[in-house]
Length: 294
Image: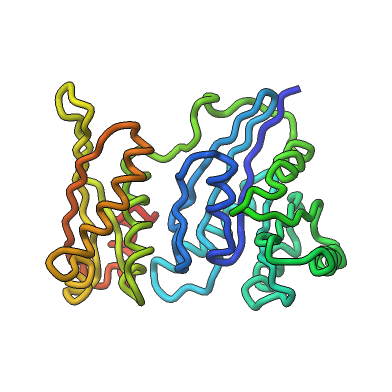
């Protein structure tokens, strides 16, 4: 019997959702950063084994919206709860349940979909602390399975996959076995560039950027691909910060992004980056949609 289904991975921002899925899939698709709003789109990632296939939906972390982009991201996260066969709710090693985790628990209170709870960053807990935290969530009587994991160190990821297989319904193979994401190549390249900007820039600048890839061209019969991309920001002052003194910051972003893009494409990359200003685009619904957040 072949099994398949769709899984929503939810949790507050930066709890480790994208790290988990990158480990499961084995490719760097969802971007990782310690800043909120890292994942902006609902990204479908595909895991295929001999007798089952899982389609993961990596959604933005649930948080209270501050602008039109935030409204879109919250709507996106909540909408997936009604679309899937299994919900994975991820929390971290905190012994106290935070405000956002409680908010998510409220959203799950009347959901009949099976829920797997992952307690991430369990490597920071000793055996007794782990037992206490697991029992705390067991007492809520909301979860079909509770698994302490470490997405960073691969701890209990196999147990998570087994739990998914046990719960999945019988179903078809939705995607070819060699397919790992439904996102186009340009989207993944843009996300890798945006990740490096998030990692290198400070304060509000990273949240106000969008990366658009204009062209991806193979240069004749050479093992070289030219990638042309724009980093859009909201203010002229931000543009100067992104470029940096004598262009150093832009070079740093470009050089680190190029390494990951080369791994993705399996070829040498000539990455050309420009910085452009689109004032306050996150507050304008039309601009949010224009930049692909629909």
